[in-house]
Image 1 (cartoon, rainbow, N blue to C red):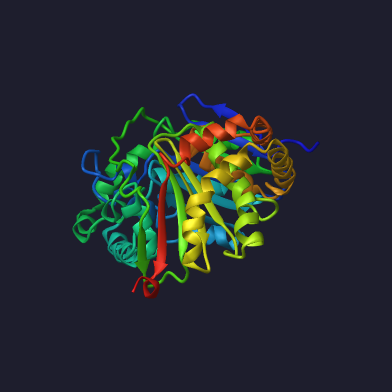
Image 2: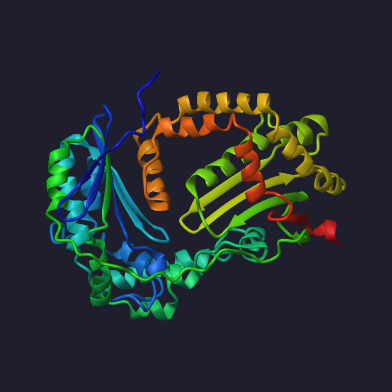
Length: 420
């Protein structure tokens, strides 16, 4: 049996910062700094806050710093050593990550911390960034999705939007009101005693711990402004769109809470039903009837929401009444088939052998787990969770909780011509 590739050592520093370290025999290292500041905190109820501030701040603090005052000089230094860095603002945290060769570890860590804690923010740089963020915002015409039909699913079938487009990007008025002083006022929340660091590769750990232990942190709390998830139109209905190419049946689950074990059961269940190897819905809809090329599924789980969707594109709308009549009975029968479920458990655990081949795979999953579930899940734990489903009552419970007719939603998206 191979070693667990999701094992991380945990180091809690005297200033409250937590460092998660993962060793891998590679000639480089990657680091993620997870600041407890996100777009949910971008509102006037927080010091320095206003709509769009968390995302705008993430853009602006990486131009210059006390250690690298020339615009873009740190990014160029990292790139010339073959590395890269980036940042992403989520609802409740901002992930700043950097990868570079081992011989540049110390100057990379020092430069990164200089930008996070001591950025130089000029009005000229803010003016440039306002234009960039406006363009990014205006491209998101169908926010929170990237299509008209996706927007409908996210806002008028379910409501899964965390916050408005303006809260993420800021209105023109918000962007114009952002100043070096207001960005610095909001930036102080990065130096929180809830700061988390995920590092992996062939790094030297001691200098990393020393550097982050030297941060003068504060116990800071930000208020959140988040839209609750809810069903808008759960009852079966049909809706036509210009860009939908084929009748597509959706069966969805939405719960305004998250239990990690239950959310994982939902994910396992949808994958079991839809996979192309022996998925019972795939067998029925494609192999037996030729109604679909394949079934898509997805789940999303965070602290206050669990979502799951089966998406079934069809070559004929005539199949829809049959699917609606039979799908729940077929799901129940499949979940009660102990032989088929055991085969799926074995397939999933064999499939997992091919996961985590790269350092990025390991670290990005760890960061996602910390942001959404407040812990890193080991590879052994995922295997154990798979194996528990040989007790098929657990999957049946997940079905009744998330996907049964009295809790699930249905919608069919049609090509506009089919609706005429």
